[in-house]
Length: 376
Ligand code: G6P
Image 1 (cartoon, helix red, strand yellow):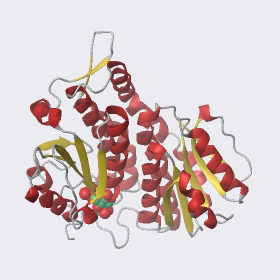
Image 2: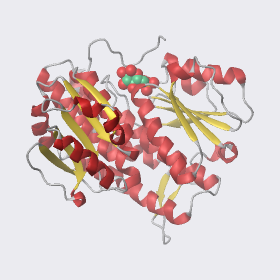
Image 3: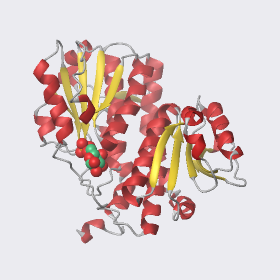
Image 4: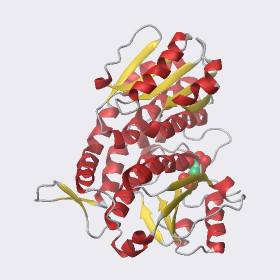
């Protein structure tokens, strides 16, 4: 095992650093360069066998657990905003037991690193039992030989390579990359994405591995930031829009490996509860790219600051946020709004990692947790 970790102290850190390559591999499934005016296009053979199935779907239902569920939450924004296909996302353990409605012509996307998560599998089987008209099931999965892949109509792989650390990192960012490819492919198949948007996104996708690489270069500043968290009891992660699921994921990572209580919140909900918790002892991590939600988010940050909360902000340089008393800023490389959740995943992973190492926990094998949960 140790040999596999190479120069890294933990599998988790190694896997965080593998993300530029893992995402590049995943993107290569679908992206190719062209000699035409547009530099990139979707490869003809990407999901080609499934074009008829994709052309008929009218609704998307995502089912997943843990980190994979958070990838689904990002996909909901993409499906609805980019190609106007309604998308619901639910944790498998709830979906399975509440007699849910699956409308006709649904694409059911099961997201799972392992493909063996019992709740996800049983939720899928429950839907298949009722066989709604036009049902198409898809496994977004990192293990081609898994049960989930065997039991679904379409297999969309993440090419993350084996993930050993219990806390998922490269599986998550490759899930996001693959979901974006699926949204684009569906958009093209149904002619519901305009060309300009498509080609801009393809170009931006091509840049993604380099941006992930650049965000890894922030490791030292994030490590320095993490020192403020070592003795904390509780922590809040805030984001809006596409960054809300990343706030949830950041909180999950911190809980899992550092054992510090953390909550992810949609920043607009702050005033409906968590603001009451804010004091000088609770760090607040904010995901703040300069996007269409930035001004609103800034107002939320001011509410926290005015109540003596200490802010740790991941922002783009363009946001012109400057550090001051109780306001720490790390600049994240510029990335287009749509793909920003993929890049902003890296700093929250690194933050949790360094906090956990400082607190001396078993980073790769946190207490009470398992990599693959094969019991309900
Ligand atoms: C466990 C793991 C998490 C993972 C979740 C879902 O809780 O510790 O890292 O996100 O299962 O696993 P899956 O393999 O279905 O993605």
